[in-house]
Image (cartoon, rainbow, N blue to C red):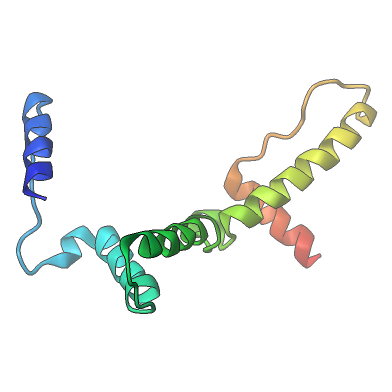
Amino acid sequence: MIGGYIVVSLYCKENGIKDTQIQAGKPNQNGYVERFNRTFREDVLDAYIFTNIPQMDKVAKKWMDDYNGGHPHQSLNGMTPWGFKYLRHKVIAAHEIVKPKMNDSKESVLTFSPPSMVEGLHKYLKG
């Protein structure tokens, strides 16, 4: 990875970016990456015995798809991105049915921001 570090260093120098590193023994300075590394190690590397790189790559890609779409996100009030996308499409589809009946208006009236939409969907589902 020395070559990659040199490329990043040159890029930073050319673009006026200050290249800083975390202090040795201080993983909390890079918490997001450390959390990801721990999760990947526990879920993939410690859970399987691989005999070749393509086998590991296949498992890692499957895990990555689930990690990116199937895990709850705080920004979505605990919903998964896949769940949020599904419910959002249902709301939009329902809106398309109702829209022509709303004061003969052809304009969209859905103006949710994602957090308020999630709260509304949670209330609807708990109903």
